[in-house]
Image (cartoon, rainbow, N blue to C red):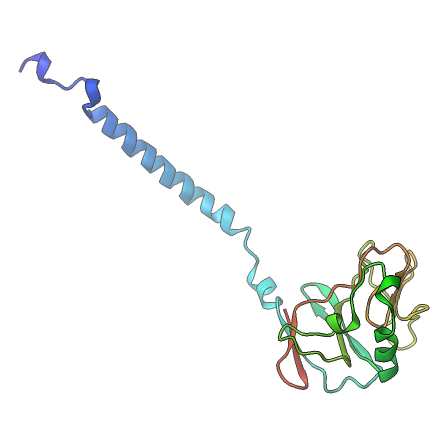
Length: 188
């Protein structure tokens, strides 16, 4: 055989070396992906965290004027069965007086757009520095607006969980929730 019959790789002719380079690169990419997958998969939420992503609460035993605290996603969830007086008080507040203006109706509407003014479901974490405000337990100070009071820095929330006084910039957060029946609420 003459030396001139062996492809030299010039003028676009594929050679064995070209094939080996492509095969090695592809095998290396598969190896890197197989090695990286356990690290990437580790960033997904754990099964116990996913189990806590929703919580169902039976609200039937909560008396009018009473509030309960439930754990949801590692945070306190305040559920208050508001009195007619608390509802009237919250509805009467002009939006111009609020730092973070929201109507009372918008705060008591579930994800199915059903308004239940007697039930307030909110995350019990102060929007200033993440403290847990007082006002959910009997005997707790409720602040000057009858809702919740954060003694750490003096933030006061009204009966709709809206910020009225103190350094907190926002209202207490309303999570996504749905009343699946008259007595059962699913949060998350």
